[in-house]
Image (cartoon, rainbow, N blue to C red; front, side, top):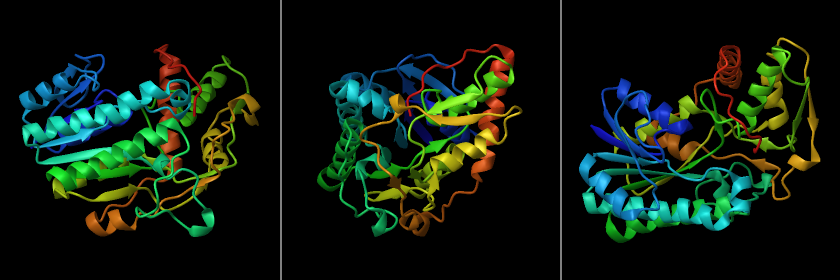
Length: 322
């Protein structure tokens, strides 16, 4: 089976390429930088998904059996600073990929959106099902909702075999330090080397999220590719809520020196929501998938990676956006 991955050099893309290659699939993909070495990929080519003609040509040349669309602008905070660019990349880029897949006769398209499409749900209603209304509260969430709607439209209107996946937050080794958990892991590793403060400043962490390990996430994508399900939409989640504070304490508790979390008002998002937990039953019923890794394992592996980076003097990814 040939699989083409957009955004193959990203956090999830690299994990997915390695996983699919290990199971015998032929992997190629695109990224902004191009010619970027990705474990398991036979070919990686430069492409901005806003360039519809180029992505069409690349998918035609690759002749994939399946396409996984991961490329996009992934920061909620950045979406408030650059809403037009966020829509151009996430919504416009998805439209270009869908058109290219239709033209090339691709047999399976995995369109990855986000739980941010649900906006600010009511915890009293329980875990969020796929039938819940799309009510985003950020430009990022709105761009992913548009992407989600486009995927459904191409299935219903043109028969393109699209599966929409509303992914809930995930972390693990290889994640950019612009995001919360790798940012804190990096600061722990620096503090252990006496190169950083014992105080770790964060935004509002007294909120509840449904958290996954990226390796469980890529397992779900592989199962969806292999089962060939089309036309459906799935939450990719655990169904279990965890406070960000307790999730971070699982990370900080592994530090070799005492650390403490402090809330920094400057890091608190005005549009943040208190609770986001998904209903995983539809995906479980259709595929048998369920998360297998404990959160403590995810944090242990993430911190081990950052300890190695800091000790070796490898490039330290910057940024603190959650």
